[in-house]
Image (cartoon, rainbow, N blue to C red; front, side, top):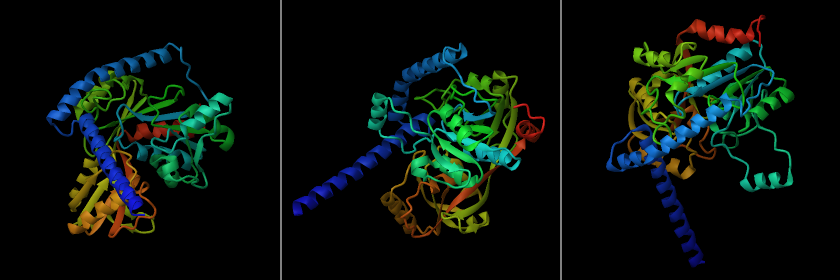
Length: 406
């Protein structure tokens, strides 16, 4: 028995060390991608990644060429498709934009479905995929996160963003599948939807969009202008030209003229809008209690998050009078374990934190059985169009007016 206990203790220590090593590695990679910290190590790795970025660029251009020449086909599903996406990795504030568009369309009488890839959702085991391929079985249907009436899956199975959209958009169907063409057909046939929103779909060429809405983060529009894996760009900046509409996000004030100039340099056809992300309120994790933003004033708090742009989140808390006595930044889409949250909250309590604040995306990834020792809230974010309201209204009206051509 003692030997068995020792083996278990050694195994647990190994797992803890492995998780810490993996977390440090993820943070190091993030620092390289976003140029957040300069050290000999990050500089050396950055130089080593430049050739890989060049190879990635050629692969991106080849794929685009194959679709442009119709060697690879793009599908049209017989109902309007609105594509919302980025040129960069996450951090543009895409989810609140998708939520706003879906809500506007639903409230004006359209039957809406959001199609998502479900990044970091629980995927089918690889062996099942191989068995199905060998035996010529049919592929399973898309995951139905919401049928428009009920939320049917949790955040681990669905992915945090689709789950959040499903919870916030009653009446809207939310589906997850890597094959968005298949998901679109399923949404039309099974639920009778008459408009599709392709979430994070600017690089998804198999499905043609009637509107291609490109989001650009004003605070960090193109990162270091390198493509993956050296930078955060998924495509070269000139691919702005594919957008029918551009929405500059996090534009709380007048947008930098140089950014608008860069956009116009690459497209003359796209209509340009701007929006600001503003906090509506603070909410408890179970959404049963709402608190005004003013409770941040003169409060000692702990801030923790696993998002692409944690600095803007923490900056907002500080601007509203909070003193952040403890902060913890995880990598984007990090799924929290109970033990690591216990460690984070213990450190926060030791420093006198009165309550904890996280983001809505992070709140859905917290274990249900975790009991926080202090009150914990998430920040509910909305968007407001700050420039180009008539363009946004015209974009929505194209799909909701009696003269709708789609």
